Image (cartoon, rainbow, N blue to C red):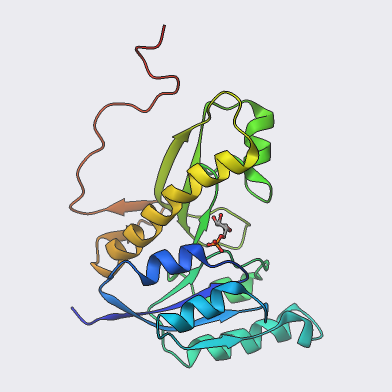
Length: 216
Ligand code: GRF
């Protein structure tokens, strides 16, 4: 199978990007592109020997001209997969359509719960017992789209937003590279109804519960 090419889009810290670059995937990263010139993730990408570029949305009159420039930068690398990793711009339907079925995102909640921002605070406020993260194909609606992988973590008594975020982030760093590996291996298929089927995957055994079933 020919090696796949990734382009990763970031806006900030880039810890998911780093997890992807460090995972030894059967893929090469053509570039990491940021819309923020001072994103700390740019230096991390460079330290992995990956080319970086900045396309600052403030340099453009509107979303469409920004996205035209962003797409031109992405397309130079002929990516098989465009990976959103903490990229904090809402994308238009035209941009999403251009990368249809090869644009993925990670979101810090168990979608469809808590789309949007401040997911950990909202999970705490809602009193959910289980929270987590989702890797999904991107569709024009924000934080929706066919789900590839999810990981759940318990919400523990007394958790702060930061503690819960850190617990979820550890899982993000595990499932995002794993999902990209599955895509590179051709094990992820998009079904007509907008759902994902996974090939050659072990079934998850048992159930996830928090508190665990034997708690008294
Ligand atoms: C992560 O929590 C990710 O789920 C969300 O934005 C955050 C980015 O963190 N989309 P990092 O830049 O990958 O460290």
